[in-house]
Length: 369
View 1 (cartoon, helix red, strand yellow):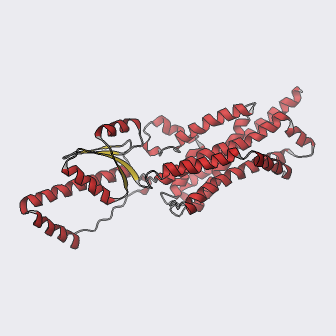
View 2: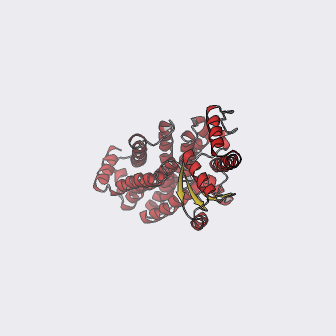
View 3: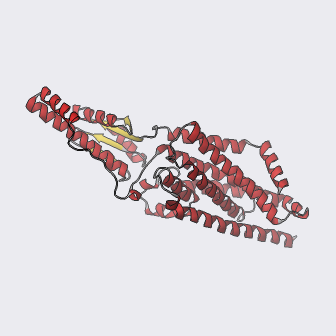
């Protein structure tokens, strides 16, 4: 097994381009997409140019928590048709329209803030009309110094609330997506060794099947895990990404996810004859898993029941949901036990089936010879 590790390490040293590219692409894509709104909810806003809508817009800017992008009404409508992730507001003098594919807690909160802004502005206008500007100044001072209520809002059921952190969504999504390729490419060395006859020569040299599989798979596993942990470490301790105190939990989930990806890769190579076929299948499946698993966008905004049902076949879904639960939702391991246990069970089943199929194919080759 030691010899397999040395051979794999020397091969990686000669050809490190793939590993470096996957790691760099993860860092760049997660940083660019995740920092596009500085961790705030990105909202496109179109105003009709009236004094009221400008005042509402200013109040939203004062609220904080939103990255407001001012565009025209026509651009807002076009953007709403093309981008299902977009949240937009059309402000008019006496009404407003919210463009969103989901009726999430964040969108409802935004709607309440807009209504509050309209109410405050209307109240201000009425006071000025009746008593003049000085009367409004007196009321404003009175409201600031002697508040009648201190209101704190809290969801009755936190599990039903949709929380969204753009930085973590991008970080987790791209990390899980790109490590899929890294692990799969390394697992393919088993297929290559079987095809070239290296596998049989090692067996003749008194290397057991167990040592061969453990050597190859453990190397692939560690390379994938190192890539994930490097990306997470850079974002947490270099770029300062907020992980809500769940960094070590995310690391454990990543370790289980890499095991699942490795098992899936073994299963894929057991079904094909060449590395090229395996690469094509992995490429197609990785993109599909990322789409239906919530790597590119949160599944809360998806309305197709068919796509939501398909999420259960995606390894990325289990890891993505687990990571968001222990960070954004500040959950414990108990809250993600179902996802974690399913990842482990699926990984074990795929490993057993994949290795069994590989061995049967090897036996058929020997019998035919």
